[in-house]
Length: 467
Image (cartoon, rainbow, N blue to C red):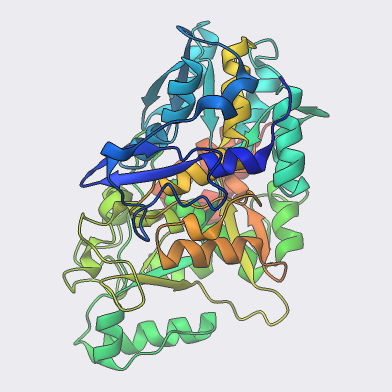
């Protein structure tokens, strides 16, 4: 496949949303100002006026009648916006994208690969899982085509390409990017009580105690780590944020590369620091139960107590926007918003990041074409425009922040691209799969239900595979 004229294609792409349904509108490439796509600031327009100019898709050739299967952990409501962002590609190339999402993705993907029933494409949420697949099933996964690599070189920081590379071979382009170091809260509750956003970790703990004291011993934080076969992962994010804040970026890197053991004193300190909130019976689990309840509470609705006044704070990533009930206003003056999870460090502002990576298990032309589309700036803008309720961003430099749906998304995009912010990729996603998506997850559950930090970190360390 040849490279494309990105400016022309970007002008050709815009999304319209009518009511609760999504409709794709592609403005003709001859529209020099790109004004043919949206009817208001959220991308609304009259779908009856929609037109599609498919000339920009000529590079992919005629793929009419072909099908590409996609397997992912991105379930609804995020799954719906994913599928909506493929519509132009499907209509203009003739390819049908068969989308399958599962909360048991991490466990079932390896089963399917081993059984010889791998999907055409899978979105891997852990680079550690990519390493496991390449090392254990080297003939199953295919290197990314040159056109995909060129997109990544053009639109992404080189560190992102490194996450999708194993032993010098580039396999997986980044899809989206997550920023995880946030605390969700109710602006109205804070304003009514006269509370200010904390600027340091110490201030955050002081505020937690003050809220507890001011409200007759009320629990302050709500949390949940239940996620089907992936139960535990939200807790690993909390530990990783603490590792960045108590040990620093350098030791954080040594941790996930196993240059220091999982039960190193610096790692133990990070767990204990997280425990100052998560294992404190005075502080959790607001409106949901005791400390033990965190292990069984679904992560998808663990923060809902903020809306009914039962919970004051909930640590979760930017994509938690998609989990708020329909009609929730996410803004500084709305029902909910989020602030940066603060640190006592003065020389660095760490941001825990993450994202999915596109892996292919065959090299058919239609599969390579879809890989290339997903790595482009055009797809990034389509995905933004097809996410009218917010909760999605990308580190793709070709993404126009104006296409993002909410002020919070635009803020997050700014954080990800800000050279003064140190973005550290999710450590569990970089660890070997049996640890990062295995004993680390189960260790979180054990820890929340009574096991000590030493017991848990010793057990995880013992599970680390020998090189």
